[in-house]
Image (cartoon, rainbow, N blue to C red):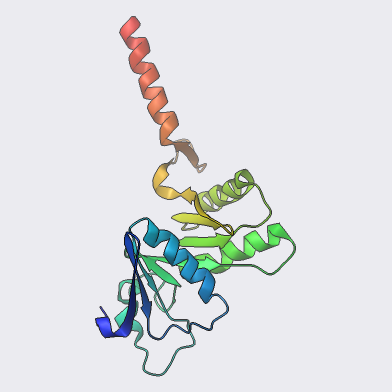
Length: 194
């Protein structure tokens, strides 16, 4: 872990924002990253802003990204660590929202399985369908958050889904916990009335 003198620490409401001294506060996405940090710190999280790939010669990858070593993300430099988990922020510049969404997923998921993306002009249902299809196709996606001008909302969290492969074939099925619980309750209620 890095020494405290390598961070600028800012108490923010219930949480803490830690900015690595190698972070260039003049980068074009710094304000967006800081806005993300404020959002999660408001909720009580510890958020660390990490430096970009183009870094000074005194940068030691192992000292900051030690928990990525030995994973498929070794050598990558995600933007932020929120409560010990790495996240990548992705924005877009195209006018085509489907292309923007695809590019944000493709680029972000190379850095981390948890991404925060700027909201494209697409419905949540469409974006969730694409994400679930990618998960079904074997992509490693743990969380996708959507960032608007005023808020950041969770769009997809793997921890809130239940995945299983039926014994009959290769087809994966996603069942939400709510449906499973409802089916169990329905079975218990019906079995009691028999």
